[in-house]
Image (cartoon, rainbow, N blue to C red; front, side):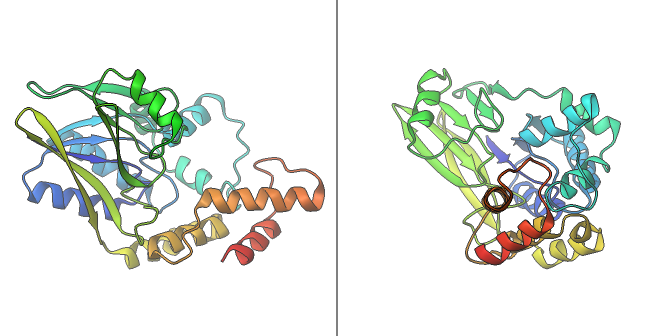
Length: 286
């Protein structure tokens, strides 16, 4: 028994198709998806169409990531002050306004963590950030990661969110991050996921890294209007896809924008971050 475990697609349906093509060509039709299905990249509706198609044809398990919580909360409460043309929130505005009611209904059905069982094999615990918080970042060999693993009953744990592919073993348990399908970190812009091989009553991991049509993915940023709606955010996205060094994340740039705003004005209030601070941060970091 083999299972494909995929996380953090972020609307990169082209990379998703490449990963699924690889898995299916190796006879794998069981898939676990760890959240953050849309955001950042063009045409989120195409990602959702593919996910629903995979759900109909294959054995798929889904959980909720922090992005799904954004869309659910926005529909229920509104008031996020997302702006259509804005580096801080333009990508959020774009993605949300291309989701359907069916999409958000689907997200609402998803838990933030769950156990997955296959007869004859150890239990899998899957989550996006951590089993307790979709935004929590579990890293390799951190005290917090160890605490989470010690508390978990399942011997095999899978998380996403950080976009970093790794394995960590602690006190007889194993934690894996499959990396990001759509916006990998420290992988040269390539797409990443994990294949879990069921062998002799246990599991063996195989990390997969694939290239895909990154030029087309970048082209669609402009074609879709995202580069106008979220100018500097999209420039960081493009650099991540190209794998351009230094590998600075969106969070790194946003953090610098907020600090620059505070240094000059004495305050900052998300999401009200003027574009000139994005320009200053981008020039400084790149």
